[in-house]
Amino acid sequence: MGEDLFWAIRGGGGTSFGILLAFKLELITVPETVTVFNVSKTLDENATHLVHRWQYIADKIDENLTLKLLLKSIRSRMHGNMTVQASFTSLYLGRVHELLLIMEEKFPELGLIEQDCTEMSWIESILYFAGLKDESLDILLSRSPAGVFDRIYFKAKSDYARQSIPVSGLIGIWRFLHEEAENIAELQFSPYGGAMSSYSESETPFAHRAGNIFMIQYAVAWTRPGNGELKSHVNWIRRLYNYMTPYVSKNPRAVYFNYRDLDLEMNNQGNTSYAQASVWGLKYFGNNFNRLVRVKTKVDPSNFFRNEQSIPPLSSWYNKDIRRWSS
Image 1 (cartoon, rainbow, N blue to C red):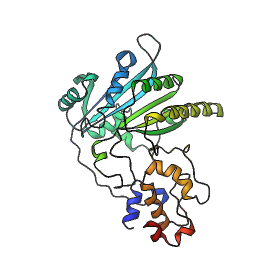
Image 2: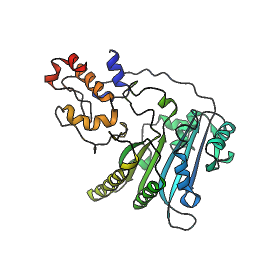
Image 3: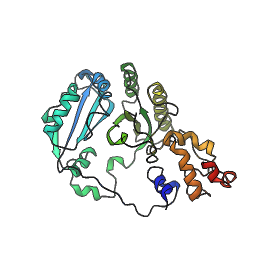
Image 4: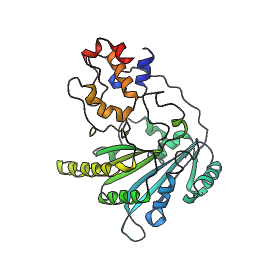
């Protein structure tokens, strides 16, 4: 297929370039035993300080450890009022005693103890993080969705944080979460660093590497259909996204391609101009967007493979001398 096309489909959205019939992956070795934990703290338990502190260690704590953060509004067990719950969820490629030493050195504020942790195989951890820890591994072969997800509507958006969000910014987030307390609304902070930062931004189309502390997913879900519900929840997440502008990446404001966000801009039903597509393309792919466009122009100049946010080919005017344009 050539080096350029092989580069493009490994992170540039394969649906822009053709139909993938097979893919060969090189797996990495993981230990026989891994360790997981999920520790939750509310505002009464110093959650604001813990979330603020987490931002300074999340991307550099240890290459064998990922420590995600989930934020949502709940009703306090202590006084019955609404509060924010911060859940610190971890997978460590090793045994519990090694994990405890790392956490004591890098994040002692969380107060992790051995009783919070569980050792298991890596495949069992897949069930654990999916909320299916009591199920048999056979459930991974099921092609039917779990019942709770049969009729659910949701909207998601994403951001990248290149610096820590101050406490004042976090308190503003808490207010937004309380607005949607009766629904499924949450923020997930996913740490970067480690192997993510060991490659240049042009190694693959995925450009969000060194310098990004964590990625943010905003999500709201509801179960009742209707335009009123839709407008209310979508308006909430858009207002939250606007509120976060001072705290996230800029020029462009980067987003995660796998959390496809049609708010950013969409292609026309026919061919789309480079200028139109670059509005969202530069946010998803950074400087790699231009190379993706050149590959698209070579392999699919008629734009047969397209969707709302597919990579566009250059117009026929540019097709006359693509090599000169590329140089």
